[in-house]
Image (tube, rainbow, N blue to C red; front, side, top):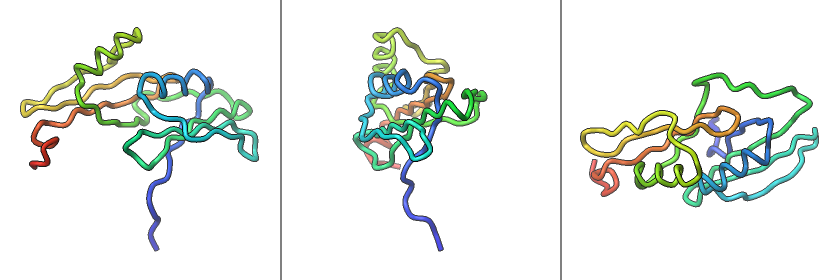
Length: 134
């Protein structure tokens, strides 16, 4: 027996609203639903317009404070242009925490830090990959 498709990834946070605001305003994700779980966690589900999977942001203060270890986990999103996304970040008073690192054939990647210390990787595909040539 095998599992079906990936449904969501969960990140627990200390400040739910600050984190949701970052994912909506900086990354452009859409909030698809919000509710309280039977055990009392506050849950917000977000998604990108081009993906089916959601990201679950969870606040559950009674389980203690969140302390994200460096380089533990990250989410990766595609962007059309790392240079343009860098300008978008600057307009919000933010900057890349690492990179961008560009590849000789084009494309590259960079990281930003989300609230709570989670890393976000942004990937610009090489022109050949964008054209469907591999």
